[in-house]
Length: 72
Image (cartoon, rainbow, N blue to C red; front, side, top):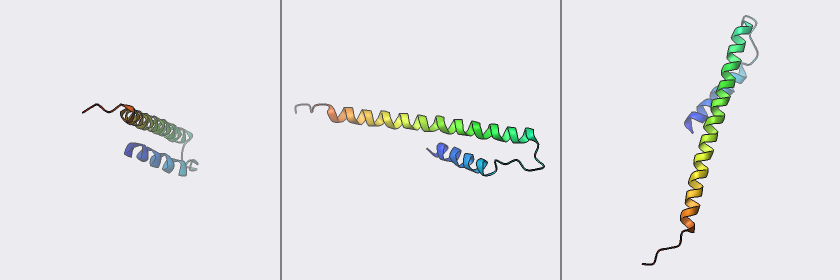
């Protein structure tokens, strides 16, 4: 989750500076945009992985709750 939050923070910071500066070349702006897109992709991957892990844990917990108690 920390990785996802770090990626989100980086993405937000990149978006704040999305307008190219006059002295910035088009190539530099394109590289920065590509980096932001890659960061967004990494964030989506991390969030999807976290969502899957949480879903798996919830499913296992639900299965444990449904198992009948063994006679003592």
